[in-house]
Image (cartoon, rainbow, N blue to C red; front, top):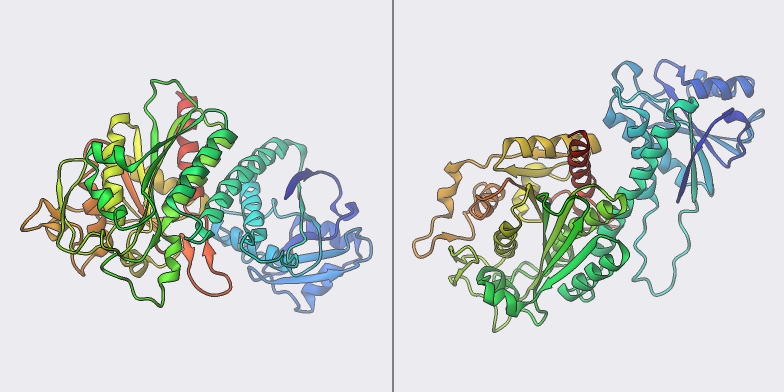
Length: 502
């Protein structure tokens, strides 16, 4: 989709739809007043007769309005102007897009930059508009037997400027919004691809293609024979049950001095999770193609970083494996040694994500990282605790946690800080090994994070449990959400800004 900035009189712009807003209390935005004046009061008439109250998210479409060159005028309710905030702004933009999608309009002039959003500037608003439009037109149709009829015809969006002074800010928002949208699209495409195609090898090949696409990006694949030499017994205990060899995929982006410590994102890449010998119930097992959404987030984030050419060193690591039942698969009660030297009693083979991640986290110690964030669809307990609005955040570093929270709030790709207290560690105690891989029924997401914390004592680390936020598993709208690519990218953009200021 193409995005551009527009100056001049919106009523004279030739477009298939112009989008304007009305607040509660019959208050028209500046652009709405211009269109109302040009049309002889057409918008005011709609508001006065009660067809639109101004409630946030309400929409009304007008056609062939006299005095306005646009074929359609979409009026969207903005809510109470005195209590406008960022969340409502996104709700309003999303409502406008939803209404627009039901029309055959191929282009639109969006006049929502002037809408209040709790002090957010035109850069922020432009970026959110771009990200929401791109999200709305996304479709995963690669697996269709024949190309479906085109549901969305929209291909270009103009953003109406109040004046020329905000043009640079809006154009920067468009550029960054498109970069994030590209990363989100990579995430969605990978996560939505079924497990018979999206295997560990497929992810490795995708990483190699990414390295060919972007200058400054290098891909290395660690195969199982090298893992054996490295002592990654925990990772191998998961991959050994499958005919698909496991792989650790390393994507290195060099955007700063080679001596600068890198920021590292590590993704759980279980391309299909049967649960292993601790077999999952069959009814919902099809959702387990999404158990590699953490890996997809890494691919998406690295795409954003390379597209924006951030002045940082960033490393993306993917722990890719299938979790399958077979004669070679791990059994409940098995004890394995991780790369760290710590031994693990496997009480449940369906708690496999932490088993592949712990060896990947140990491996990245060699880079002496500035920060490490792992991302994983790790526990159903996170879904019970937080649902889908927020990803669960754990960290061993207060400053790092605050930085991630700030990035998540900025992008509205939200997280919620969870406890990582020592009191929970006792639930992982094992009679026969250094630890067991589950902590019992209570606080399942917390104890999973506590497990990973035992392998991250040498660096600043955070863990995002995205089991509730990364995908919708059922229904006509099922599929990956692309989260938390926006928050991760914002976190890295903020670190790049800090480097520039230093």
